[in-house]
Length: 191
Image (cartoon, rainbow, N blue to C red):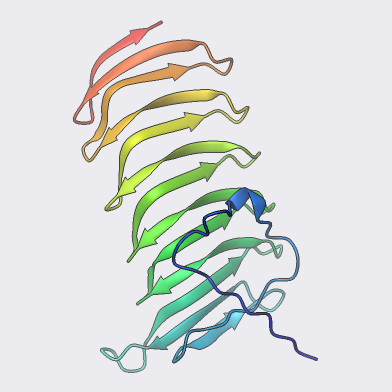
């Protein structure tokens, strides 16, 4: 007996849903492909990846990924979940470590990172968080130790780090200040 569970992967992150609330456990859901696309690949235990594809009209005999895609680690836990447009990651994507812990979440636009991205430590808890613009880190970025304590924070511009960055030890005590201009270290002071 074969049952179909529809998985719709939206281009945008649902407003009230966070990666931490979603678990990769349980039976892997099959994918519902958009009209004109065909399902390719196999879910565990027969395979580790499923995606939708359409014929590449510019290259007969080749295909483009189009629509939802899901990958699993060899052990069966979900590895990534997202969507493609013309074989480029597009929309909200999530990744997990092989033990099922969240690894990252953020948005792609035609193969380029945009908007807020969050990475997680393999032990749990946030590792880093900041914004991307046209694939470049931009604005305020924050990094944490695995124990949840703030590690460093500062501003990013297209050229790299900018302004003052403060680094803390694992107990939260400030240990250094570094000043950057256009991604180049200008001053460094131990505290």
